[in-house]
Length: 166
Length: 265
Ligand SMILES: Cc1cc2nc3c(=O)[nH]c(=O)nc-3n(C[C@H](O)[C@H](O)[C@H](O)COP(=O)(O)OP(=O)(O)OC[C@H]3O[C@@H](n4cnc5c(N)ncnc54)[C@H](O)[C@@H]3O)c2cc1C
Ligand code: FES
Ligand code: FES
Image (cartoon, rainbow over all chains, first blue to last red; front, top):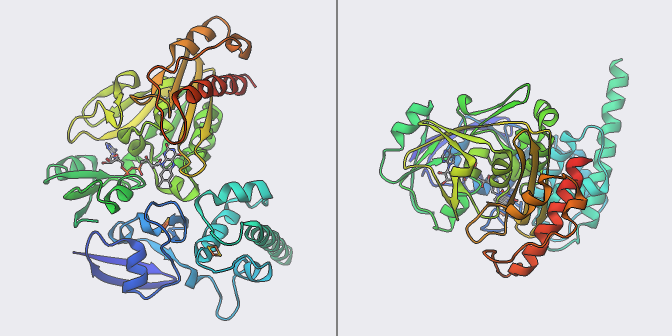
């Protein structure tokens, strides 16, 4: 057993857990944050993606104790109260989901992808960047559309803000 | 996963000491070891986490001399500006590993210590004629990669860095398995002051190897034309559900041509 302390979605949390506990199980079972999903046993599907210290990683392939001391953002931490994050809003608008199982991981991967490409995204980049996120329903088409729309909306927003600041 | 004791090492010396516990294993990015533990293919008694050690992180480039810390992630290798200037082929290779989430965690030290026969780094380091630095000694890449998942590392030995001289020309071409993202065949070619080296991953029954056929063909003329009649033998190549040995032999020639074209571009 080890003590694990994390900042999750801005709140300090701690608990004692077996060393073998995966981060995803700590989030879901100890903290009740069931938005992060488990879709495979092989580290390939991406349903479990969360941000650890600002990087989108697979929480099924990391021990909770390994993350101790880190700052974590899960799908529950994206919206600002009732207002959806632009990527969430774009998935809703463009119907970027069917059953929704892959969606939390898709959205956490998409926010990271958009942040890494401030110059903007195109379809080929989005599809390549989604290598680690598997969807069994949508055929990806509307997911790609939603991410492109969110990327465009967010860079417009950023430009708008920059203008205001100037 | 079986139960395990986790330790976060405070230094390389501390890690070496902790490794003496039971059947302890080093944990770096965990992108190979944790999946193996989840399926109970690996069951170490203790894990010694070296991923946060500052001494093992980062990339130093001074002229043509490049040193990469063992715990440097694939993402950091693929995006490092100095490395992209000194040896763009290696940065490009790192950008082809797995997927973005795997690249954020997986490390060069973990990849070469694991020496998966379809991993990318072993081909790169062999073709670059790199030196693998451990807490005990320095090992030439030619002596380091021993066979399937086998290296020259002794029990308790820790890879601390990898170093090489950036070659004048280099490129990597990979034919990926679309499901696993590992190489079905990957070829890394370099042309440096000691001549041409070509290393092949994904194909050999004994893991990564240097292709004498490609190196001989390119020795006099480092050009795609020199590979026009290249015939690669299927002897010693893997056959599995993904590809037969003959198919892999053909792919080696195709990837070698593409790599030389990219290196000359
Ligand atoms: C979905 C997926 C796709 C992938 N695709 C690819 C791919 O396309 N190409 C590819 O090359 N790889 C691929 N990988 C593997 C990935 O590159 C791993 O990062 C790498 O193989 C292991 O590095 P790690 O840092 O994660 O090591 P770990 O998993 O932490 O460790 C691996 C082994 O190395 C040992 N070790 C770790 N650090 C050291 C050290 N400093 N000294 C000595 N021994 C050490 C450990 O004890 C363990 O035995 C993929 C992995 C996943 C999950
Ligand atoms: S549950 Fe993490 S990659 Fe599938
Ligand atoms: S919407 Fe069902 S798995 Fe993606």
